[in-house]
Image 1 (tube, helix red, strand yellow):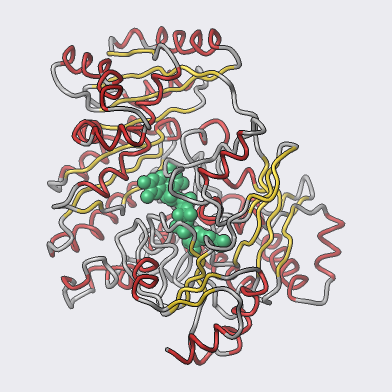
Image 2: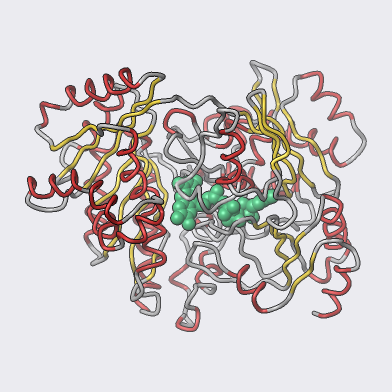
Length: 564
Ligand SMILES: Cc1cc2nc3c(=O)[nH]c(=O)nc-3n(C[C@H](O)[C@H](O)[C@H](O)COP(=O)(O)OP(=O)(O)OC[C@H]3O[C@@H](n4cnc5c(N)ncnc54)[C@H](O)[C@@H]3O)c2cc1C
């Protein structure tokens, strides 16, 4: 190990670490897994990354690979590896320029810092996540992240104008949308980049209809490689950013990103709806959607209880006082009294506009539309009051992670989506599946996109947990396949969703994913075991509590789905 460390340290100007603290930190993300890398390297520049690509490629006998890591908030195990972690935070952390509707940035910049710079120019990257205080913009590209504004503005994939990326030839390349002439020029190049463009073009062109048909019909998706978005025959445009986004670092290492930004609307009002059960939820959602809320989010009673239990932490997040928080919660407390118990689900529809009157008018119109349902609702009287609802929504998973000591958050059915029209049929079926297990779980999510985060709290040392995770995953994902939804709408495949890709897309499409990986990464050096060749057995052997893992692992095999 010393020899490898010294050898690599002589090739790069960034730091090469193998101390316990660096390895421990890089061993975890926000998923259920723990994998200890050999080394953590903080590349100083693209040249460092190129030198590492070169070394790893020329020493296949050492079986090394490179896995990019930014803030490590991934919930799927995406940045975990047994080999070399490239920590992008220390040296790729500058916002280079903001203006003219764009921002040029390095990938290791935290979103919270990036937003400070963009807001100075009244510009916003609207695909920010609920983890916006914790994650980086490079991780958002890696996972094709989305968040509360995705309902109106889409996900990260819609905002990448250009990126620089170190590819398998060890060189840094600029990737941008090409027209037919530019594509032909690229394909004619006698080098790795030329072959990459040529092979990708032929792969997509010769399977065009199959690929277009495979595009999930849900409004957001982070599963698989998004081949359907690369080549547009009608417009004659070809954009490899569209397949690199969401690839979880399996196709190359991003070193710079040019994002398109939007001008945020100035004013907003929240219509908050308190439900005592799920009855008629699908139709209710569709009625509210008629008024085009910018965001439409939800959280359940367990989340609300948690927020009340950890009020001091919530106050800190809101940068306010306990007193302020208590005051802010009066509307909900009042509703609780009226309903006689905690609402089962709280829905928040945010209406935005350039004037306060306009935002309030739409919120009231939406409230009128659903009045026939006799639900408890309120419209926030000011923008300041919106904050408490957003804080509960954004912080719920984080509160669970850090404060529930006796049980562990278990993200494995954490990010599915179906079509909102299907919610009335889908939810009772899901309910029946969940009812077989005596689990405590929170549900929060982007209800407007019918994308829900179901996070059970489980005792990971209990052997039963190891049976429930694969069994319940299979049952929930069978339902997702049936409703043609996605197994992951924004969190990425990683170790936990990857094994279910074939069930979602079928073998033919997954074979095209394998081809894509081979074209970009012929030596298989970028983040192996994610997107293709993901194995639940491997993942469960790296369960955070692996000391308790039982020897027999046959139950973790994901059965091959019937051919599509
Ligand atoms: C409390 C909480 C709430 C969350 N809420 C949301 C949410 O609302 N929406 C959402 O989409 N996600 C959410 N997530 C998941 C996660 O925060 C996002 O996916 C986030 O964008 C990941 O960013 P990161 O900087 O932590 O990336 P990491 O976890 O470090 O990496 C993510 C993936 O990208 C790859 N990667 C990172 N940098 C590069 C690079 N430079 N080049 C190539 N590949 C790279 C990694 O290999 C990995 O596969 C949440 C997570 C938590 C813990």
